[in-house]
Amino acid sequence: MCSWERVSSQLDGLQVWSLARAPGSPEVMLAGTCPAGMYRSQDGGQTWRHLEARMPDQCVGGAPLTPRVTCIWIDPRDGTIFAGVEIAGVRRSRDGGETWDVLSEGLSSQDIHGLAGVWNGKRTLLATTNNDVNRSEDDGETWTPLKVETTFPWRYTRACAVAPEDPRVVWVGAGNGPPGNQGGLYRTTDSGRTWERLGLPQVTNSTVWNFGFNAADPRRIYVSSISGQLYRTLDGGDSWTKLPVELGEIRALAWTP
Image 1 (cartoon, rainbow, N blue to C red):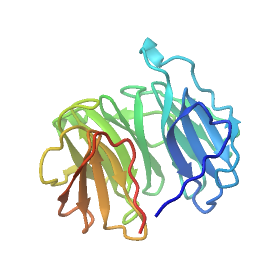
Image 2 (tube, rainbow, N blue to C red):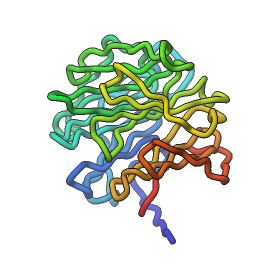
Image 3 (cartoon, one colour):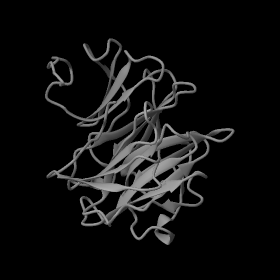
Image 4 (cartoon, rainbow, N blue to C red):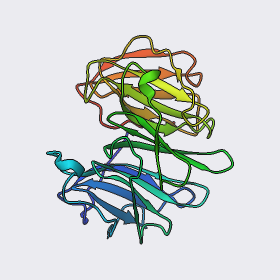
């Protein structure tokens, strides 16, 4: 049984699109919002402070959306923070959120949906967008589109995360649009040079939007489509079961032991 308490804060009246907890410092949390903004709590969410993260008032290219921070990834090695903005590229902070760099050179699109990082002698970043997966090997200063349409049946990519079982492996959810009416699940062990499609029991009813990982049982993983389907693996992704429950829409996914 879970219980909740509403905390009045600077986040009141904002849509919270992303949350991250600092590795090794569970009281430190970051929140990304719509309209685009970054906030930090140093007391487990009791109080929050707005961070000057150089966020735009309008989307790049004049898209008729309100910019929002869709994803936050914090590198457990050194605490560097990366945040993805829809639609305004990537932000990076090396000092816990006090100062930020704006990064977008080479991106196939500044419509950032997900971010993940792996370490293979150096930090490599992957960013999912509305038209490709992009890779950076220089901390986000420059990006290379990976042209996943040569492997995936779709260009639209959304969920992006490293599973706790193996920090070299990045998972990506894809589909034919937001929300789309079909999708699938992919995994790379070499920073996007090659991809493996994971065998969900069926093509999902929309883009794969969320992953549910937990280090307490790293081989138990949950995956959801945006339009409400849920899938589970107990062996790290080798075999899958579609769960009978279907919801109207799933925007985020998490599980606890």
